[in-house]
Length: 142
Ligand SMILES: [Zn+2]
Ligand SMILES: [Zn+2]
Image (cartoon, rainbow, N blue to C red):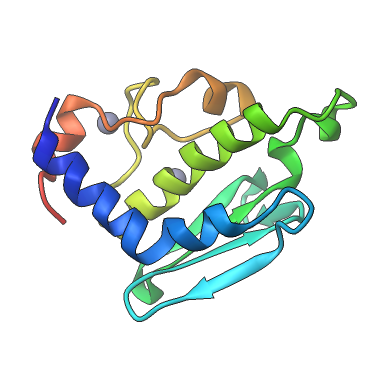
């Protein structure tokens, strides 16, 4: 475990992004936050990107802006019972992933790495919230 890496990452998350995200309530998910360093927008919508059927999130590193789209990470989308625990777990993974792009990380072939590209929601559920060793070595600071 690379303590420095995670300390720094969570410092970024906490200081610039995560506080606003955790303030959102399940019934009030639609909000945006813009701070000088990094912006994260969470929208309760379904989103598409050119060349892809759908996207769970997007990052615009040059603008230091990331977006997370909630529709397809909700159980309800698939006709299942709402599950807040799954929703938060997926939100956190996708937020870390998109913020990872902003901090300069690319997609990673390791299916357990948070930077692995999610082709489907099962990829998101399979991967962890952590950066793999290769990613951490490649980019120990950002
Ligand atoms: Zn990505
Ligand atoms: Zn990785």
